[in-house]
Length: 292
Image (cartoon, rainbow, N blue to C red):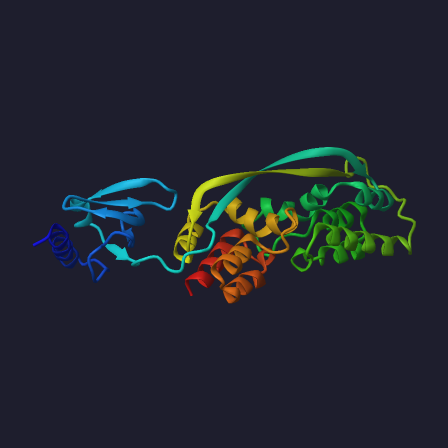
């Protein structure tokens, strides 16, 4: 009897004895997950241990005695492999005061016309990032300042209704904000200044893109990494990639359609409104779509 046959029989007995979820012996190439937390692709199986490669590229050895005391779920071989792998990135955000400030609507309008896109991005997405646990998210900074400091409730409400989900670029968002402010100024001179200390300071968002160790080759790997990456990684791929990197859509939809030829799943992810969910709610929605 060959060594491979002995190993398979031994593992089968262990699995049956321990009540494992897998109904067949673990083999090289299978993706397994243990109740104790270890998961990854099986590299090799011996009498004494199983060698696993995790999704972060790290290898680990699981002793057979540990297998006998832990439940195991065997997902089998890889599903369809992508033409090109997907690397998860995360980001760090630095905030820089531009030195431009406004104390009335006229100055707001002039500032909106000259500040860089990174300022528009910061003031329309600051709440989304810093208060990602709230839903629905509070309005953008411009809406809040106009209503609270300037006291123009009507314009503040109009600015608050700007939904970044419906805009393909930051330039389009900027244009609509300018349009609303100009319409408001057509009926008042906009010269009334806010109280001292209530000025709006334009802040620039400097984002640093950082690659993570997670590289995935199929949907199974993709959904497992989705469960572990930070909310900063989700934010980068769902928000920043579309508007700041001018990709026109989120990174996940682009990769799934271009590299896995799954246009329907890509479309469903693109239809998710990330602004109506907390980041953890967004994670759950993504996982549900992919697992389905």
